[in-house]
Length: 137
Image (cartoon, rainbow, N blue to C red; front, side, top):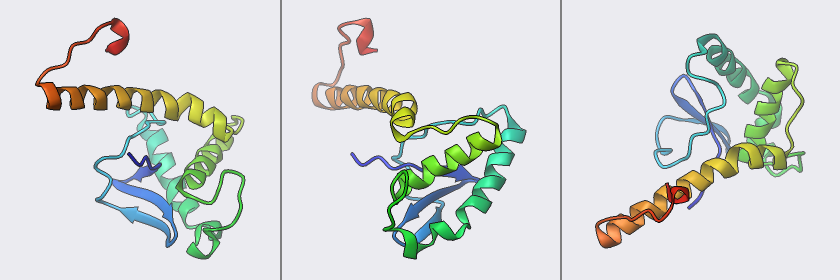
């Protein structure tokens, strides 16, 4: 399973590829969403949307710079984490390292996704799933 990082702004998925920043409406139906901005905080969500629009237009995200070495890599993950740290800095918070962000946000979500995929496969194969412990749920 390929996991890609992305951001949603006004219903669009922002992602950084060899062709630069892309804004897609479709093609991300099987991605995993990591919510960083609470849905009830409309003003914060709108701020993130505005900042993402401006951030994605910066010259460092053009396609010609995709292969450059950067602090978090020159990929969609690097784009995402650099943006998150940009937003954290606007809020007076310290930047997250790649390991900190992965450990606190990505791995817990992927653990949950893995559990649901295993349950799904068991149901497909056997028609049911039996949870052995509370840990299985």
